[in-house]
Image (cartoon, rainbow, N blue to C red; front, side, top):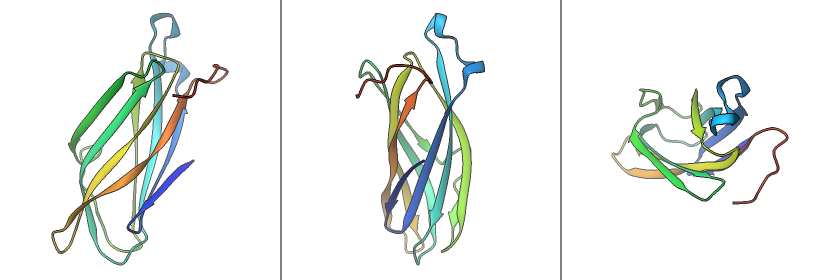
Amino acid sequence: MYVANTRGIAVSVEPTYLEARSSPDTSQYFWAYRVVIENQGLETVQLLNRHWMITNARGELTEVKGPGVVGEQPILKPGESFEYTSGAPLNTPTGMMGGAYEMENDRGERFPIEIPTFSLDRPNERVFLN
């Protein structure tokens, strides 16, 4: 489990390698990741946008930007959390992901919160630090 906390918003990520969806013979590797966003702060916030940075084992970077997560822009009151699962493909058996969510509080202030950088590792694969 990987965790980051920014301005009272905790983001935890748990990646899982999906052997059944991967095809090493054609350099296709797939991971699912479960994200929990928990408002541990004192103000209501809304997740507006996501910005992912995905790096494969060769250091090649792919950026993914867009509104919300899994088609939603959740509003989190103090003490509330939002959980979702998504996936990421790579063309190498290891890599890493991280990024930020853009949040907005009820006063209209927008600010980034960190998505912790986490490792994508195929089981039993030699890991190279990127």
